[in-house]
Image (tube, rainbow, N blue to C red; front, top):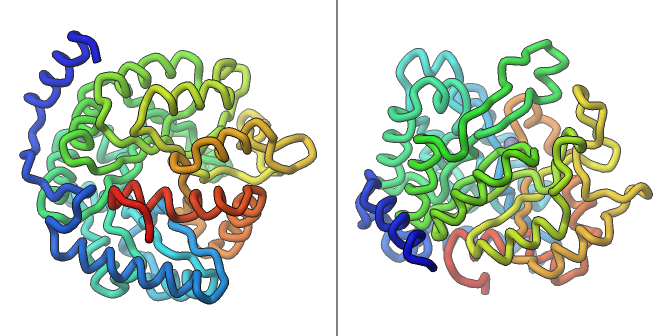
Length: 352
Ligand SMILES: [Zn+2]
Protein backbone atom coordinates (compact mmCIF):
# COMPACT_ATOMS: atom_id res chain seq x y z
CA UNK A 1 0.00 0.00 0.00
CA UNK A 2 1.53 3.33 -0.96
CA UNK A 3 1.37 6.45 1.15
CA UNK A 4 -1.34 8.07 -0.93
CA UNK A 5 -3.57 5.03 -0.66
CA UNK A 6 -2.97 4.80 3.08
CA UNK A 7 -3.79 8.47 3.50
CA UNK A 8 -6.94 8.01 1.44
CA UNK A 9 -8.00 5.04 3.54
CA UNK A 10 -7.42 6.98 6.73
CA UNK A 11 -9.38 9.92 5.39
CA UNK A 12 -12.23 7.65 4.31
CA UNK A 13 -12.31 5.89 7.67
CA UNK A 14 -12.47 9.20 9.52
CA UNK A 15 -15.34 10.36 7.35
CA UNK A 16 -17.44 7.32 8.08
CA UNK A 17 -20.64 7.76 10.03
CA UNK A 18 -20.68 4.27 11.52
CA UNK A 19 -19.01 3.29 14.76
CA UNK A 20 -16.36 0.60 14.68
CA UNK A 21 -18.31 -1.36 17.27
CA UNK A 22 -20.78 -2.75 14.73
CA UNK A 23 -21.31 -6.49 14.85
CA UNK A 24 -18.45 -7.80 12.75
CA UNK A 25 -19.80 -10.26 10.27
CA UNK A 26 -16.48 -12.07 10.16
CA UNK A 27 -16.95 -12.74 13.86
CA UNK A 28 -20.65 -13.48 14.33
CA UNK A 29 -20.10 -14.55 17.94
CA UNK A 30 -20.45 -10.83 18.66
CA UNK A 31 -24.17 -11.22 18.05
CA UNK A 32 -26.27 -13.93 19.68
CA UNK A 33 -28.87 -13.79 16.93
CA UNK A 34 -26.33 -14.26 14.18
CA UNK A 35 -24.84 -17.22 16.04
CA UNK A 36 -28.24 -18.85 16.23
CA UNK A 37 -28.94 -18.21 12.58
CA UNK A 38 -25.54 -19.56 11.62
CA UNK A 39 -26.20 -22.81 13.48
CA UNK A 40 -29.63 -23.20 11.85
CA UNK A 41 -28.19 -22.47 8.40
CA UNK A 42 -25.45 -25.06 8.88
CA UNK A 43 -27.93 -27.68 9.98
CA UNK A 44 -30.14 -27.04 6.97
CA UNK A 45 -27.21 -27.21 4.52
CA UNK A 46 -25.94 -30.41 6.12
CA UNK A 47 -29.38 -31.98 5.98
CA UNK A 48 -29.71 -31.30 2.24
CA UNK A 49 -26.18 -32.61 1.63
CA UNK A 50 -26.82 -35.73 3.70
CA UNK A 51 -29.82 -36.52 1.49
CA UNK A 52 -27.50 -36.49 -1.52
CA UNK A 53 -28.60 -33.13 -2.91
CA UNK A 54 -26.71 -29.96 -3.66
CA UNK A 55 -27.85 -26.93 -1.67
CA UNK A 56 -26.89 -23.45 -2.79
CA UNK A 57 -27.03 -20.01 -1.27
CA UNK A 58 -28.97 -17.52 -3.36
CA UNK A 59 -27.08 -14.37 -2.45
CA UNK A 60 -29.19 -12.02 -4.54
CA UNK A 61 -32.96 -12.01 -4.86
CA UNK A 62 -35.48 -9.29 -4.12
CA UNK A 63 -39.17 -8.70 -3.70
CA UNK A 64 -41.93 -6.32 -2.72
CA UNK A 65 -42.39 -6.88 1.02
CA UNK A 66 -46.11 -6.10 0.95
CA UNK A 67 -47.00 -8.76 -1.62
CA UNK A 68 -44.40 -11.48 -1.12
CA UNK A 69 -45.75 -14.90 -0.10
CA UNK A 70 -43.12 -15.97 2.41
CA UNK A 71 -44.54 -19.44 3.00
CA UNK A 72 -44.70 -20.20 -0.73
CA UNK A 73 -41.04 -19.27 -1.15
CA UNK A 74 -40.04 -21.33 1.88
CA UNK A 75 -41.90 -24.34 0.49
CA UNK A 76 -40.25 -23.91 -2.90
CA UNK A 77 -36.85 -23.79 -1.21
CA UNK A 78 -37.58 -27.14 0.44
CA UNK A 79 -38.87 -28.68 -2.76
CA UNK A 80 -35.89 -27.44 -4.81
CA UNK A 81 -33.22 -27.98 -2.14
CA UNK A 82 -32.26 -24.33 -2.11
CA UNK A 83 -30.14 -23.89 0.99
CA UNK A 84 -30.34 -20.23 1.93
CA UNK A 85 -31.64 -17.08 0.35
CA UNK A 86 -30.81 -13.41 0.81
CA UNK A 87 -34.23 -12.04 -0.12
CA UNK A 88 -34.01 -8.29 -0.09
CA UNK A 89 -36.97 -5.92 0.06
CA UNK A 90 -37.03 -3.15 -2.50
CA UNK A 91 -38.57 0.10 -1.31
CA UNK A 92 -41.24 0.93 -3.87
CA UNK A 93 -42.66 4.33 -4.74
CA UNK A 94 -45.63 4.00 -2.39
CA UNK A 95 -43.50 3.07 0.58
CA UNK A 96 -41.02 5.76 -0.30
CA UNK A 97 -43.79 8.38 -0.40
CA UNK A 98 -44.83 7.28 3.10
CA UNK A 99 -41.30 7.95 4.33
CA UNK A 100 -40.02 4.38 4.52
CA UNK A 101 -36.22 4.33 4.29
CA UNK A 102 -35.64 0.87 5.77
CA UNK A 103 -37.98 -2.06 5.18
CA UNK A 104 -37.62 -4.69 7.90
CA UNK A 105 -38.80 -7.65 5.83
CA UNK A 106 -35.73 -9.60 6.96
CA UNK A 107 -36.93 -9.45 10.58
CA UNK A 108 -40.16 -11.16 9.51
CA UNK A 109 -38.36 -13.69 7.34
CA UNK A 110 -35.97 -14.87 10.02
CA UNK A 111 -38.66 -14.85 12.71
CA UNK A 112 -40.67 -17.30 10.62
CA UNK A 113 -37.87 -19.29 8.96
CA UNK A 114 -34.63 -18.79 10.88
CA UNK A 115 -32.93 -21.68 9.07
CA UNK A 116 -32.98 -20.30 5.52
CA UNK A 117 -33.28 -16.54 5.08
CA UNK A 118 -30.21 -14.33 5.38
CA UNK A 119 -31.05 -10.90 6.79
CA UNK A 120 -30.13 -8.37 4.14
CA UNK A 121 -30.48 -4.64 3.61
CA UNK A 122 -32.77 -3.08 1.02
CA UNK A 123 -32.09 -2.66 -2.67
CA UNK A 124 -30.28 0.58 -3.42
CA UNK A 125 -32.32 1.73 -6.37
CA UNK A 126 -34.76 4.44 -7.40
CA UNK A 127 -36.37 6.20 -5.73
CA UNK A 128 -34.53 5.58 -2.45
CA UNK A 129 -30.97 5.85 -3.71
CA UNK A 130 -31.64 8.50 -6.33
CA UNK A 131 -34.03 10.84 -4.47
CA UNK A 132 -33.08 10.49 -0.81
CA UNK A 133 -29.65 8.86 -0.76
CA UNK A 134 -28.56 10.22 2.61
CA UNK A 135 -31.79 9.33 4.41
CA UNK A 136 -31.77 5.89 2.81
CA UNK A 137 -28.14 5.21 3.71
CA UNK A 138 -28.63 6.58 7.24
CA UNK A 139 -31.46 4.08 7.70
CA UNK A 140 -29.48 1.18 6.24
CA UNK A 141 -26.48 2.02 8.43
CA UNK A 142 -28.70 2.27 11.53
CA UNK A 143 -30.24 -1.12 10.79
CA UNK A 144 -26.79 -2.59 10.26
CA UNK A 145 -25.71 -1.14 13.60
CA UNK A 146 -28.67 -2.81 15.27
CA UNK A 147 -27.71 -6.17 13.81
CA UNK A 148 -30.66 -6.38 11.42
CA UNK A 149 -28.61 -7.58 8.47
CA UNK A 150 -25.65 -9.73 7.55
CA UNK A 151 -25.10 -8.06 4.23
CA UNK A 152 -26.26 -4.94 2.44
CA UNK A 153 -28.55 -5.03 -0.57
CA UNK A 154 -27.90 -4.59 -4.26
CA UNK A 155 -26.99 -1.03 -5.13
CA UNK A 156 -27.76 0.01 -8.67
CA UNK A 157 -25.06 2.37 -9.81
CA UNK A 158 -25.54 1.74 -13.52
CA UNK A 159 -28.63 -0.16 -14.56
CA UNK A 160 -30.13 -0.36 -18.03
CA UNK A 161 -33.92 -0.80 -18.22
CA UNK A 162 -34.81 -4.42 -17.44
CA UNK A 163 -36.32 -6.60 -20.19
CA UNK A 164 -39.71 -6.39 -18.47
CA UNK A 165 -39.54 -2.61 -18.35
CA UNK A 166 -38.59 -2.52 -22.00
CA UNK A 167 -41.68 -4.59 -22.81
CA UNK A 168 -43.83 -2.18 -20.84
CA UNK A 169 -42.18 0.89 -22.31
CA UNK A 170 -40.91 1.93 -18.87
CA UNK A 171 -37.48 3.24 -19.65
CA UNK A 172 -37.09 5.37 -16.53
CA UNK A 173 -34.93 2.81 -14.77
CA UNK A 174 -31.95 3.90 -16.79
CA UNK A 175 -30.02 4.43 -13.62
CA UNK A 176 -26.78 6.39 -13.42
CA UNK A 177 -25.47 6.94 -9.92
CA UNK A 178 -21.74 7.69 -10.07
CA UNK A 179 -19.71 4.83 -8.62
CA UNK A 180 -17.30 7.42 -7.25
CA UNK A 181 -19.97 9.88 -6.05
CA UNK A 182 -20.97 10.76 -2.50
CA UNK A 183 -23.50 7.94 -2.08
CA UNK A 184 -21.04 5.36 -3.37
CA UNK A 185 -18.36 6.57 -0.96
CA UNK A 186 -20.81 6.05 1.89
CA UNK A 187 -21.69 2.52 0.74
CA UNK A 188 -18.08 1.45 0.20
CA UNK A 189 -17.17 3.05 3.52
CA UNK A 190 -19.99 1.30 5.36
CA UNK A 191 -18.83 -2.03 4.00
CA UNK A 192 -15.23 -1.30 4.87
CA UNK A 193 -15.96 -0.46 8.51
CA UNK A 194 -18.47 -3.24 9.12
CA UNK A 195 -16.94 -6.00 7.01
CA UNK A 196 -20.44 -6.40 5.61
CA UNK A 197 -20.60 -7.25 1.92
CA UNK A 198 -22.73 -5.30 -0.51
CA UNK A 199 -23.79 -5.94 -4.05
CA UNK A 200 -23.46 -3.67 -7.02
CA UNK A 201 -25.44 -3.68 -10.22
CA UNK A 202 -23.01 -2.07 -12.61
CA UNK A 203 -23.38 -2.53 -16.32
CA UNK A 204 -20.19 -3.34 -18.14
CA UNK A 205 -18.92 -0.43 -20.20
CA UNK A 206 -15.29 0.41 -20.89
CA UNK A 207 -15.62 3.92 -19.51
CA UNK A 208 -17.15 2.70 -16.25
CA UNK A 209 -14.28 0.37 -15.36
CA UNK A 210 -11.66 2.91 -14.29
CA UNK A 211 -13.82 4.66 -11.64
CA UNK A 212 -14.84 1.28 -10.17
CA UNK A 213 -11.22 0.18 -10.00
CA UNK A 214 -10.31 3.45 -8.27
CA UNK A 215 -13.01 2.86 -5.64
CA UNK A 216 -11.89 -0.73 -5.07
CA UNK A 217 -8.35 0.56 -4.64
CA UNK A 218 -9.45 3.26 -2.21
CA UNK A 219 -11.57 0.85 -0.15
CA UNK A 220 -9.50 -2.30 -0.20
CA UNK A 221 -11.42 -3.81 2.71
CA UNK A 222 -14.87 -3.14 1.31
CA UNK A 223 -16.45 -6.43 0.35
CA UNK A 224 -18.03 -6.00 -3.04
CA UNK A 225 -20.17 -8.49 -4.93
CA UNK A 226 -20.36 -7.43 -8.55
CA UNK A 227 -23.64 -9.02 -9.59
CA UNK A 228 -24.28 -10.73 -12.91
CA UNK A 229 -20.89 -12.04 -13.97
CA UNK A 230 -20.24 -11.45 -17.67
CA UNK A 231 -23.59 -9.80 -18.28
CA UNK A 232 -22.55 -7.50 -21.10
CA UNK A 233 -25.62 -6.11 -22.78
CA UNK A 234 -23.86 -4.05 -25.44
CA UNK A 235 -20.68 -5.82 -26.51
CA UNK A 236 -19.55 -2.79 -28.53
CA UNK A 237 -19.31 -0.78 -25.30
CA UNK A 238 -17.25 -3.36 -23.44
CA UNK A 239 -14.13 -4.36 -25.32
CA UNK A 240 -12.00 -4.74 -22.18
CA UNK A 241 -14.23 -7.08 -20.18
CA UNK A 242 -12.84 -10.58 -20.68
CA UNK A 243 -12.07 -13.54 -18.39
CA UNK A 244 -8.49 -12.23 -18.25
CA UNK A 245 -9.73 -8.80 -17.16
CA UNK A 246 -11.95 -10.29 -14.44
CA UNK A 247 -9.01 -12.38 -13.27
CA UNK A 248 -6.82 -9.27 -13.08
CA UNK A 249 -9.44 -7.69 -10.80
CA UNK A 250 -9.58 -10.81 -8.64
CA UNK A 251 -5.79 -10.72 -8.23
CA UNK A 252 -5.74 -7.02 -7.41
CA UNK A 253 -8.73 -6.91 -5.07
CA UNK A 254 -8.93 -9.63 -2.41
CA UNK A 255 -12.46 -8.64 -1.35
CA UNK A 256 -14.11 -8.61 -4.76
CA UNK A 257 -16.70 -11.27 -5.60
CA UNK A 258 -18.98 -11.98 -8.53
CA UNK A 259 -22.37 -13.60 -8.54
CA UNK A 260 -23.68 -16.00 -11.14
CA UNK A 261 -27.08 -14.45 -11.74
CA UNK A 262 -27.11 -14.34 -15.49
CA UNK A 263 -29.33 -15.41 -18.36
CA UNK A 264 -29.05 -18.80 -19.99
CA UNK A 265 -27.48 -19.33 -23.39
CA UNK A 266 -30.65 -18.46 -25.25
CA UNK A 267 -31.55 -15.33 -23.30
CA UNK A 268 -31.19 -12.01 -25.12
CA UNK A 269 -31.56 -8.39 -24.05
CA UNK A 270 -34.38 -6.80 -26.06
CA UNK A 271 -32.86 -3.34 -26.55
CA UNK A 272 -29.55 -4.55 -27.98
CA UNK A 273 -30.81 -7.94 -29.21
CA UNK A 274 -27.59 -9.39 -27.86
CA UNK A 275 -27.00 -12.27 -25.50
CA UNK A 276 -27.50 -11.48 -21.84
CA UNK A 277 -24.48 -13.40 -20.67
CA UNK A 278 -21.11 -13.91 -22.28
CA UNK A 279 -20.14 -17.03 -20.36
CA UNK A 280 -21.77 -19.24 -22.98
CA UNK A 281 -20.02 -20.73 -25.99
CA UNK A 282 -21.76 -20.91 -29.36
CA UNK A 283 -22.56 -24.55 -28.58
CA UNK A 284 -24.57 -23.42 -25.55
CA UNK A 285 -22.15 -24.84 -22.96
CA UNK A 286 -20.00 -22.83 -20.59
CA UNK A 287 -17.16 -21.23 -22.50
CA UNK A 288 -13.78 -22.75 -21.57
CA UNK A 289 -12.09 -19.52 -20.52
CA UNK A 290 -14.90 -18.57 -18.15
CA UNK A 291 -14.97 -22.06 -16.68
CA UNK A 292 -11.20 -21.97 -16.21
CA UNK A 293 -11.50 -18.63 -14.41
CA UNK A 294 -14.16 -19.92 -12.01
CA UNK A 295 -12.21 -23.12 -11.34
CA UNK A 296 -9.07 -21.10 -10.62
CA UNK A 297 -10.83 -18.79 -8.11
CA UNK A 298 -13.89 -20.68 -6.87
CA UNK A 299 -14.15 -18.71 -3.64
CA UNK A 300 -14.86 -15.51 -5.56
CA UNK A 301 -17.98 -16.72 -7.30
CA UNK A 302 -21.39 -17.00 -5.68
CA UNK A 303 -24.64 -18.67 -6.54
CA UNK A 304 -27.55 -16.29 -7.16
CA UNK A 305 -30.99 -16.48 -8.70
CA UNK A 306 -31.86 -12.79 -8.98
CA UNK A 307 -35.53 -13.44 -8.42
CA UNK A 308 -37.65 -10.30 -8.27
CA UNK A 309 -41.24 -9.68 -7.30
CA UNK A 310 -42.35 -10.06 -10.93
CA UNK A 311 -40.71 -13.47 -11.27
CA UNK A 312 -40.89 -15.10 -7.84
CA UNK A 313 -43.39 -17.57 -9.22
CA UNK A 314 -40.78 -18.66 -11.76
CA UNK A 315 -38.48 -19.99 -9.07
CA UNK A 316 -38.50 -23.53 -10.53
CA UNK A 317 -37.30 -22.24 -13.89
CA UNK A 318 -34.62 -20.03 -12.33
CA UNK A 319 -33.48 -22.91 -10.13
CA UNK A 320 -33.25 -25.25 -13.11
CA UNK A 321 -31.20 -22.75 -15.12
CA UNK A 322 -28.88 -22.07 -12.23
CA UNK A 323 -28.34 -25.77 -11.63
CA UNK A 324 -27.61 -26.21 -15.35
CA UNK A 325 -24.78 -23.72 -14.89
CA UNK A 326 -23.53 -25.35 -11.67
CA UNK A 327 -23.66 -28.74 -13.38
CA UNK A 328 -21.08 -27.57 -15.90
CA UNK A 329 -18.47 -26.99 -13.21
CA UNK A 330 -16.16 -29.68 -11.81
CA UNK A 331 -17.60 -31.16 -8.61
CA UNK A 332 -15.35 -29.38 -6.10
CA UNK A 333 -15.82 -26.02 -7.80
CA UNK A 334 -19.57 -26.61 -7.96
CA UNK A 335 -19.78 -27.03 -4.21
CA UNK A 336 -17.59 -23.98 -3.68
CA UNK A 337 -19.73 -21.74 -5.86
CA UNK A 338 -23.00 -23.18 -4.59
CA UNK A 339 -22.51 -22.52 -0.87
CA UNK A 340 -18.95 -22.61 0.44
CA UNK A 341 -17.94 -19.25 -1.01
CA UNK A 342 -21.04 -17.57 0.43
CA UNK A 343 -20.37 -19.18 3.79
CA UNK A 344 -16.83 -17.83 3.86
CA UNK A 345 -18.04 -14.40 2.82
CA UNK A 346 -20.74 -14.27 5.51
CA UNK A 347 -18.88 -15.88 8.39
CA UNK A 348 -15.19 -15.51 7.60
CA UNK A 349 -14.53 -19.22 7.92
CA UNK A 350 -14.82 -22.39 5.88
CA UNK A 351 -18.07 -24.34 5.97
CA UNK A 352 -17.39 -27.43 8.02
ZN1 LIG B 1 -28.92 -6.65 -10.71
